[in-house]
Image 1: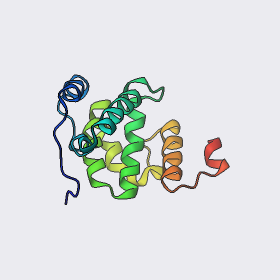
Image 2: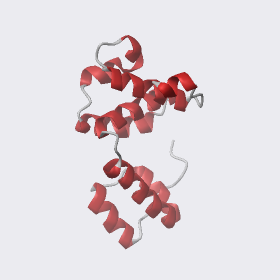
Image 3: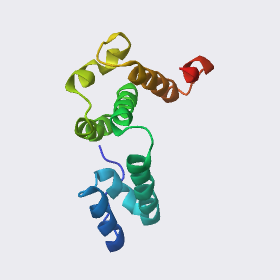
Image 4: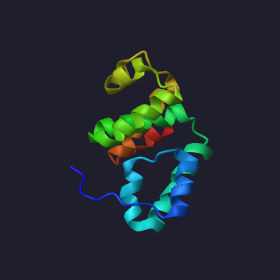
Length: 131
């Protein structure tokens, strides 16, 4: 159940969102209740998606695992589409909950998933960070 109502975007923000994302997800419409926050979030998420050194496919894999752990259905649904578009394979999506024992993930992906789980649980041990 949605608890924060969706709002309309100021015209300049609407234009920027359309330039970046086409139709923005409902999260942005909820943020539009505070237009300066929505504008800042837009630029923050643009930088993460387009200026990060971590490959998009790996980031989406990590986001999906975090959504799985937190049972964040909205996050999962939004990023599932993005993950597929970024090249995450269906076999990886299906095996994500059992990534440790799966042959679907290479060493780099497993290291990222290990770190993602530790960050999600707010418990990044030195041994995990060293991987």
